[in-house]
Image 1: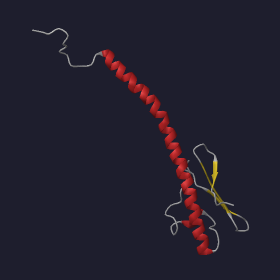
Image 2 (image 1 turned 180 degrees about the horizontal axis):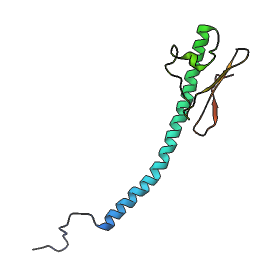
Image 3 (image 1 turned 60 degrees about the horizontal axis):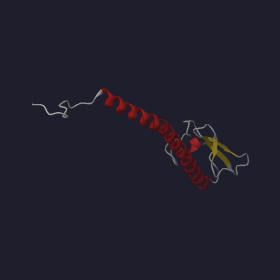
Image 4 (image 1 turned 45 degrees about the vertical axis):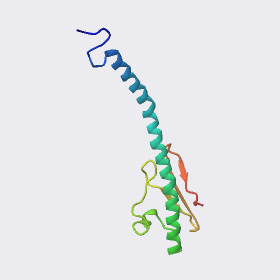
Length: 121
């Protein structure tokens, strides 16, 4: 004998399935674009940290040799293991002043804008 109001089928109806898929699609549409922004922010933060680290390493090199390195590759392997790259995966721009009293160090962020190190003169 069947009871009224009790459904013996234990599954989702087509309407319920469509509603669940719509909710998942909406959530995906919200989350995925923000993931790209988060990754770009992380790359830009790493760029700033690498610039700060390179400034410190260049100053240590200067204190050891009483001169700035001619190129960043001169720091490898004694001061750093690998030459770091900017947020776009390119080598940092590094140039020592003609008089040897300062240097310029900069890299590109994810918006392709130059970011100069704080210690650059």
